[in-house]
Length: 293
Image (tube, rainbow, N blue to C red; front, side):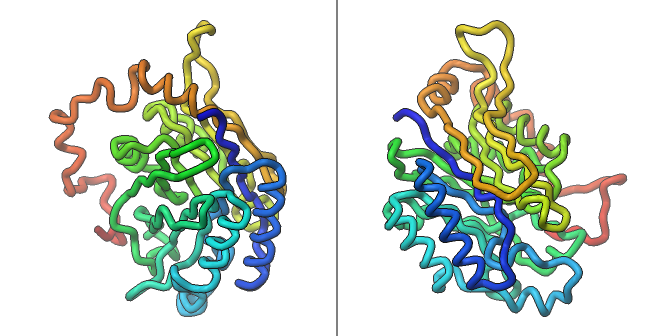
């Protein structure tokens, strides 16, 4: 199997859908020249996540179909470059739009469509339609099949998101993002990777984009090595703040060996004792008037 080379496209969006298509294409081509097997965009690349400070009617009108020309272009590009591409978009959807990731494999085949489940309902994302579930797909890469799932931004703040993906077989979670990745959010990702024994690759916007700061990251989930005393930092990449294409090499063989022997993930869980986790009852101090199921 060997190594999976992941490119995080930490780039600033243009002023239009066409500019984002062109800039996204250039970034993918550069990533492939650098040896990438998989390239990931930040959250809602089709319109640069420009949803704040604007009337909902303005930004929701920018939604595009999941089977439209913009998405199809990146599927064709994935086939041409023989590189998996995770493209993100404000998806036209019945009712209100969705915040969506579509993952193409190196043959240009669509392997995963995921809509953000934990929408930020305390702000502008209340005008989005939340996703319904978490999904895992087998992604054909030059390293063979890799089991891949996705979270989008706020999803990572709920341990249940990564846990469900682990239980569904994910080895790698892709996380398009659009917010400041400060120490606590990076710690969330480190914890999700550690406790589920899987890799997490997050792509954020650079610091030239309002309310973002780069710091895209990859955590490989391997905390202990047989030849070492104590634990190791599972972070194999933390990008700088500026715009760029940041590369990480994920050792899949090592991750899989680790998952076969270590104590986390689903090795010693007691789900029969976790009934309260699926209760929909919310008690103070967590009651919020704008909560929606």
